[in-house]
Length: 403
Ligand code: GLA
Image (cartoon, rainbow, N blue to C red; front, top):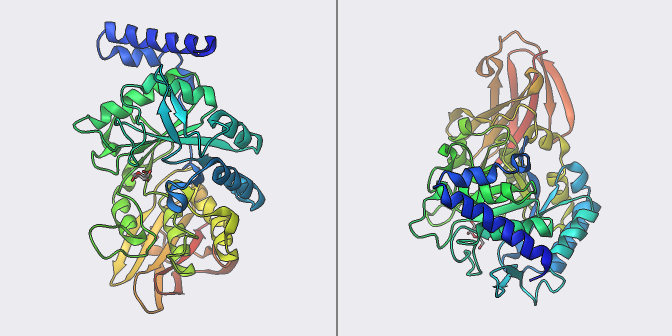
């Protein structure tokens, strides 16, 4: 062990010992040593994660290429800041219990990768699990929480996705709160992305241990999975929608990472996916091969008007306000008294959908400004409402302004 690592390890050990000596609540006191290091996420986190496209076929080249492409494609400048390695980066623990990187796929080590990502003006994220093993069978953090948090801080990690495999009868609130305290005690602000799939209703944990929490099982690269073993885009949107009251600045519902650009969705479906995630104030973590995007995928992921809806400072999660057959209207209140209006067609035929101002809580006589987010154009101001044709499995996304 080097001197620096030994000092960190002793410091962490002392905090844990002090906490244990004073009973369980003492763990919270340990974190209070450096309360200012708790990360914040005033708007939904944005970035890229390796899992949806690369799963366990991830390497330092994959992650460096993603960082290069996020910059070259303009995505960084559009707000995608976190580059996150999901499962399968881990090697064994060393003789002192420190986690190491997989020597074959990450031979330069994680600190060097983090440094590369930071040098691009990006932030760096990593993955672990509250159980003994991750979902892919690598080493999890159970029993090593403070040690791992210190390691992440030393490496320059800014974001931790923390999964829930092999956790047996662990209490989820306690397990996530323990890692939150370990991160806070690490001396580095590290966003905690909780990934227990909504099984334990993490939106009810108080105080929120992390800044975002998955609300569902894993997303599949299809519009509608139509079976109970998988979840497509629309199935996830339906589940996440009803939780809208629990989201807000610093604490977000996470309906999983984007499948835009992975091949299973038509361009209309991909625009609908992105728009639904925008309106639901969902974290926007691209999950495709950024170095090989079609122009359509690029234009979807970098639509700054849709991103502005997602990142709006009010931080309210939008939800469905009307449904008739396959036609739906979703709204999201925006700063400045504006509203985002999403017209969604779940059906197989193009259909006209009308949103009336009265449904948005405005007098029918209001002559509202209407911005078409996908066409990037203003529609004529109109009283009463707006009607638009919506493609199958598609949306129209508007920003309306009563002023
Ligand atoms: C779980 C998570 C996924 C991904 C995999 C990795 O299934 O929900 O998002 O992180 O584990 O093994």
